[in-house]
Image (cartoon, rainbow over the protein chains, first blue to last red):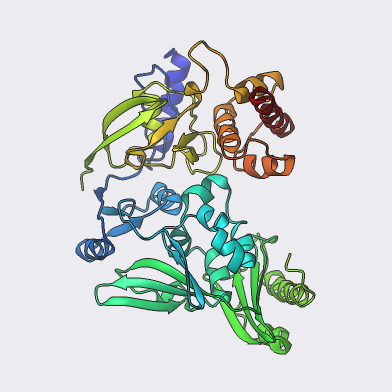
Length: 294
Length: 163
């Protein structure tokens, strides 16, 4: 039914949106499809080993890695074009969750669902697993990867905050070999033209983890506690996550003086975000001390 | 720069299919435009609303945000493939009809596929599990209660049939 009315909407859509990235088309099915925001053409590479991925990153000036694609596709829809996408689906050995002496190693291609359903994590890092379970929805958790959550470097994402306060190390493969970065050092310290291959999370018998994301996207706070030593991670409130480590007794004074000025916008004022960081951190620490991590 | 063609071989609702696609083509476009499987709906175009949900190797995915080449080697199931050859509706479809679990119907194919994935994963989910799982998709008519009840009834009907 290509009525004049339908034609009107096609023309109107075309005149309103082109050339700003929309297109319209009729289909073989005889229906008028709702239209996408166009994704610019790109070259696709599908290496099979981590070192081939690193070589591909070096050879292409304007390339991006695609794992689950949750974040990348959204960015490309927003006009962030890429000359080359390097697909990791044919690279094996990057999805395992393994027990090592003193730490758990999570392959960068493990999905959120893999983390959520791992018996190993349930036994060794149950609080981490419970916190990770709150990420996204089931469609995102079954497709999105732990590595993608980190490499997206989005200030509202939970992965960097949770891993930062857990004392995790990020393992990158570079042209010069393997490099390990503390998760709390943030995305600015990630090596360029490198493949994140794994995340190593220390397992300590007396370590505790608490996480409060109820005020997202205004602020989120994670707390890692080992006896009287505490790490506080703050998401959403700044351009990139903020981390502070010290003694429990120093938290409130330290957050008052060391917390950078938060983002100030209609979603949440800087003063409100600043106040909530301290409230949530204090509450999480109290709950952990009382043995209630929820 | 110019895009490249990729060769995709997969099964769609049990039928082997092969395509040449542009790297930037999305799975939903192949399903809707080439196979005339118009059940999956394009709505938010961001992978957020779930109206385009199909199952890829039993996993619910947003076909609007999945490149067609990512479906290579996989088994795709759409709402068109749920009913039996004789037209018998899948228990989830029947429960949606029985519970009037749709108003405008635009989100319904995605909701049904999401619910099918849940029952494949967990045949007897409790109400909290259903609410958490089905929270992935958005119904703009806000008919959520009937949707949740439909999934509960579909689970119960499947359990009953399996006895």
